[in-house]
Length: 379
Image 1: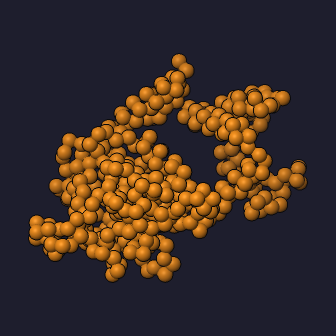
Image 2 (image 1 turned 90 degrees about the horizontal axis):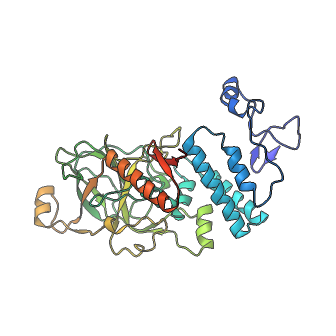
């Protein structure tokens, strides 16, 4: 039997209803023991209506032993059902939404994550990053990671060249990396990536021979790292898929302002270590990431993925005599200089818990913090 674009095996007990999975192995049956109807005592439900369907679904999900998962699902179901009720969602609109999400999944590949792109253009990516990675005053803010980070970048020495695009304007990038006390951070792994002069990342070129426009460096003992790149240019996000069609329907453009991505990884400092297993060679991993945006870019105030923050705006200047002498470039060579300030995991954890309590208290919700995340406090 065919369900959408997926072939599913026939259920012999109900031929019109396909099995959701192929024949299970013993391991799969053991893992699914929590789904065995003979072992589950769900709360009774009947006579479901528009008014009581939400509380019934929440009650049915309440058998979950994971406090955080149960809380997230409770709020998700509540808001999802309220959305349907408030908009008076029609069956055709519901089906159109499911079809759209199916198309988003179908276009995903090892080098293209359309779901992250969807999250980006809806502003969800920036919202989640801001909630989960709060920053104290004086530290460098995070922003959206974007869908084009890979794991194939080569590690280069300070002063190395990350871009070999002959048409790009050569750019000297000199940065420092410190903690919130002003002490230099040595040995941090720094992933950096940008587009070429045409506004395309290397993975967008089918004929590419290897990584370009990306590199990995390590900060020196005094927290300095420097390299040679090209001046960033604005570019459109991929808009040949369902997310692009959505932007067209909304009369929104697909452009991002000129920027360069940085991702920092150092034990003891804030970074997100969630990833989508198993990660293929080029697949996205999420760690603490940010981008620097060129000031006065034509798309500075209309970024398609809502990534620009005032603290991350930078100016491209000229090297001048001091930088020219120290780094071996001409005085009129383009220069980007920036001082990054990273936050420790402990600082982030404490600030996140504090912000969670304040935000949920305003909503009248009594919570406790478990593993750094809020759950209902029923005591």
